[in-house]
Image (cartoon, rainbow, N blue to C red; front, side, top):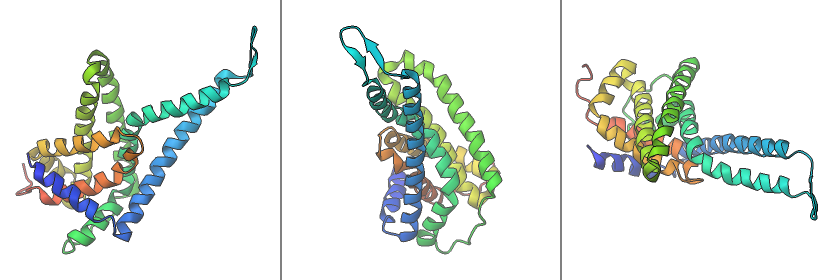
Length: 237
């Protein structure tokens, strides 16, 4: 397992933060992730207000009109907790949307001799996003049993499961741009342990509120580097 390559890839990603082209994509990714989380927050607040309805009257206390505020604050706190889980599919969606922009910015600086690759057609990218989101949600629903049964180590199971899934998707998307879908799968299988480890190192900050907003774009850049750094050899089976 090439742990050194993972940290080298991430270090190069951080070193490009002063690149205006890269920083633009990063800010766009953060903005989109924040908008998605705010939209979910607004939905929780609306649902809470709808559930409380009119002000409540209690004996001896009279009219109680602070339940709406309580529910709203509860929804905000709940969102911080749910963002640990929500940012996994959000990261997947954002990566699919911005991968070409991220990879182009990375390769222009670090791999300038490579030929320019055509952008992934929108409908093909959308299909891949929907398919992977289905796998991501389905696996995590099944993993809920493990989270409950092994509650003390649930976060480690979460990191392991989603690290595998996210690493698999991020590497495949990065590799497909250069070697095609079939050969990307072959290379992914050859480097699965390194890719899984890199995915786990991405899943860990995804479980930290606020910090997780940075992960989708930084992760896409890191896996772009990782694809170029890992030995490829003959991509045929």
